[in-house]
Length: 540
Image (cartoon, rainbow, N blue to C red; front, side, top):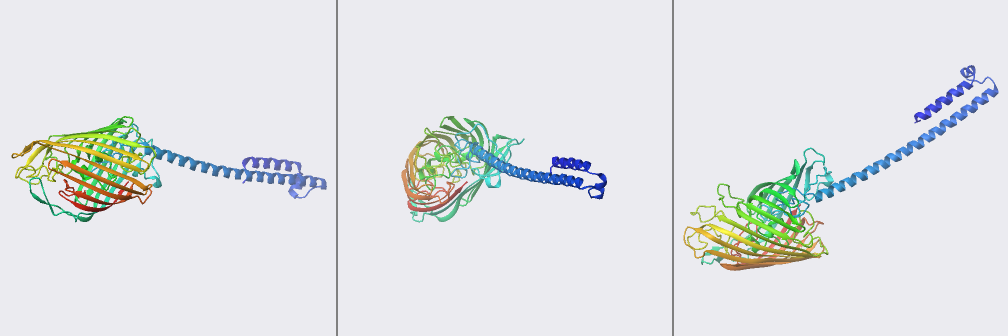
């Protein structure tokens, strides 16, 4: 196709040619003389040549324009790809939305945060460190880019009048447990013979569905969790709301784990062993509703301060909860850098990412709570199952301290000191516990005014095949007022996909006089047994 300029030039040349020719000859279409015919023929030849040149020039210009369009398309694709990469990086560094009952990552993938998606019991512990002061709000992602430490269901662009993020996370734990080698009965410190519950089953031990994000402002966090345990036939629905003020201070209210033990500060389900240890289950607090503040006080120094309803009130109605509040706090230091890379697995015990740099975590926690049995004294079995004596008997059950006597109230205090070291695929984590029970209120005389129990846990493991196969050993013990107990075990973890979010674990555990019972743990009070377990965990 000729360009407009070419048409103009062709018109002018045609007019000049016609003016030079005899009008009569033109109309007759025959030259009036040989000389005139030759001149006309020459001019027409020149005109045809020029027209041909213009066609060639136009074709070349059209081809050049097509090439420029292709180059522009390629450039736009590269710019789009770069923009998506920048947005993905911004999302990874931004505070992730809170997730109920234990922080799934309130900020820059570190420990600070709102209630998250990671605890070992009904709800998870709080992700409490490195809370970012600025919450990035990258634009919506394509279908192939929805995974950002969870599945992004919807996210508004940066300039949206109402910022909004909805993210989905999941923790699922499938376990085979066999305790049939256990003794049939055990005897408590008062000489009472009690039954030992045996198990040989396959259960969906825990499943947590977590929806969280922000709305109206990236600093306003929300989350909702549905926690289920097929083994315990239990379902808990929980939520929380938080506000990120800055890196050092995030305030959140809702359900979460009481931060009295390292295992309740955003470590679930990323333990080295198959689950929490026997000692940790015996000493630690549980899950409740409350308010907490957390953040990074200075480089590598994190805190979490919590006020709540009690040691474990997940299944206790509000009209039964007493007026005494629980107080708990955790402080930890990572002097050589982050204990783990940003993301949900920030506080995992394994050294899956195998850095050559040594990383250290030193921490401590203290908890105090005035506890009520939540049941009338004429009921031998209490609804408060958060505390056990060291002989495996519930503290609030009738006959725990003296025949026929029931404790109605008691004060719980617990100090826990923890430490961990990671290097080149190997990791060692430990904790020591001190627990005091006193100020008993009972319906009859009991022979003690207080009890003191202490104990430890230690887990060590390393990757024999990087990011694929890890072996570990573990042990824990309780040295108690009414008896001692211990456990030792070994196992292997197989990460059969190129991610730390899916693995299989096999473990053989030896227990002696277990002082605790928990449906979604391997432990039953009084149990002495060899315990084989196989477990699959998916946590994204």
